[in-house]
Length: 302
Image (cartoon, rainbow, N blue to C red; front, side, top):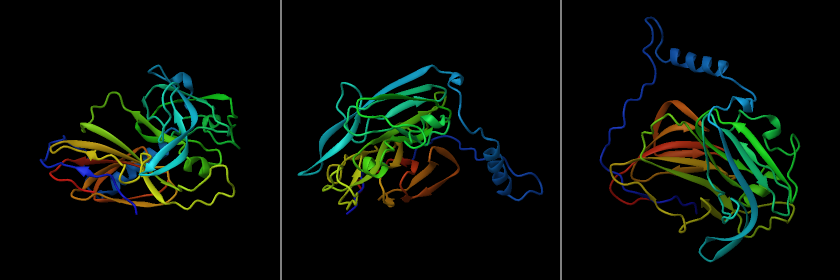
């Protein structure tokens, strides 16, 4: 049975500011048509392809990720083996450590393969990198046991992204090899007071990562590496507005419903929506990311 984190209180309305969605259509123009034309034009003129590393404007942000086998209790009384990312000298975990960078930074992520399997690092949603930095074995390379490789790119757009292993993708993802990659706009003042990142996944508690063929039978649904009742409560105090980033790193479609309140969907797959929309149910497919605003109210809800 799928469970969602409990959402705690939120009641008084709070003024966030003014949201400008576009200029009024010119005389004789069909409302909405001008906005659509602008969006298409922006897509046709947006830069594509590798952004040279020399174009970084905010210095270099460096990370090192190691790979370790760990044992984790995902539901009460159920211990599973996971293949987990971690910073050197710190415990590895599923999800791996959240990586936060700023627009304009040159980002360097060094993968140290301390595991007995080959691995790569795919930066899911980042389109400014060169092909050899995309972390797909048959198009670039693989990092063998004991090896290292540094992935580099220039962060060009703010948004919610992810990183994960792309070697034997289904197996390695299902063993827990993923984490959040957040690109922030340093000059933007957020309209929310706090953020939460929730990574969705499914787990087969009987699966052996070394056993082939791979035929998972999922029996647990995870949020940040834990299933109900081990999923921490999501506390949003009354009168506050929080940003919730949903990242789907699993293999099955899900439909997330928030009891007691509605939320505003403001971004998808790392891109701000031209027209945010109000909802209380969010269908989300594998690989998708959504940013939603949630306002606090009274009560405790699933």
